[in-house]
Length: 190
Image 1 (cartoon, one colour):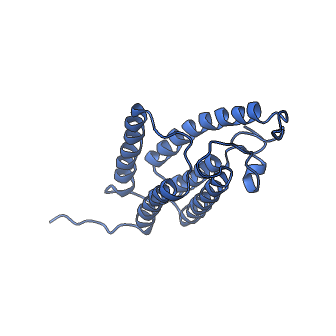
Image 2: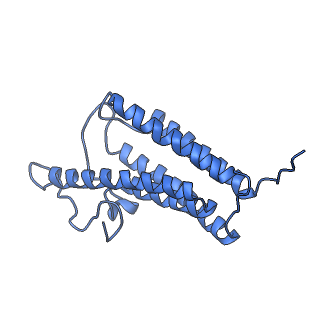
Image 3: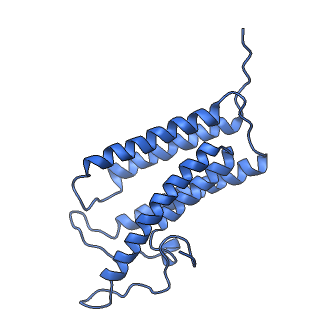
């Protein structure tokens, strides 16, 4: 019969990280996020599903394919640390955003504290940081594509949200003035 090589530790870790990320997302959807709109456009269901399923299949195959070669131990450990920091930071950023809106309201407030002192969308910054770490950890072209697609989308969401914050928080009509030096997504840059 055919001899198969044992899986590398990083392949097991990648699977666990991928699953933990989506379990965290499910938990946040059920218990953390306070959505301002009751519905999502039907086209987003297909767009989101094809993005997540398509990339899960690509990453799953290329990270677990026969002949996979892991990166150096340094990249694995640095990437894993970045992923964990990104996931924890993203979770804490979502908690901060949750606490800005009282249950049952659509009110908005300026997010503050931690990375929110530097960027409008710390949740996206942490998520991108985490997926860069994941990509370093597994050294897979598919993971880099997944990260780039997500970062591309989050960049546009962050720019739009940043502009909305600036328009909404002018310092007039009892609102706070939005911090002028705060960037949308990347501290000091964008």
